[in-house]
Amino acid sequence: MLKKIVDQITAVISTSPGQGDTGQDRESAIRLATAVLMIDVARADHVFEESEFDRVLQLVESHFKLPPEDAAELVNSASDEAENLISAYDFTSILHQHLDDAEKARIVGMLWQIAYADGELDKYEDSLVLKISDLLHVSRPRVMRLKHDAKAASSH
Image (cartoon, rainbow, N blue to C red):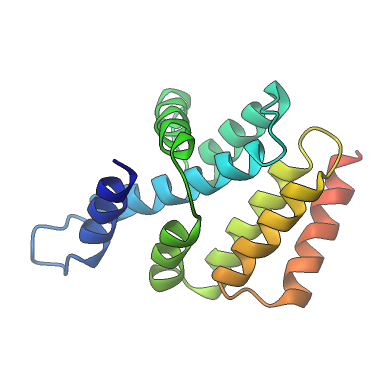
């Protein structure tokens, strides 16, 4: 089932304008891929706390400029997909191919915010965000700055 979802996302994103792609389908696919990675980070320590869920919801709503009900629907869909996630590679490769460097860095920044949402960074969360940032080809110095910023923001 996960392979089918990844194939659908890839097909939507790969559709050239004029082949029926409205731009909305592409954006929806990018949103889902991003949200799945967010949920995966939140669950990396095997505890999906309410503070992490709330932070994912808040970030999805603000980053994608979605109304609360649409953000909740996206997070719930992403949560279902993340249940069966074996590897982040499929989703990161989609994002790497279709986003610019600044957007990929924003995603990594959000992942750090989720990792720190419960007030502490678990070693599994840390490892997963670093792995995702490598797969997105975000430079290590930038990743460390984003990590530092998320940690500082979480302590306020």
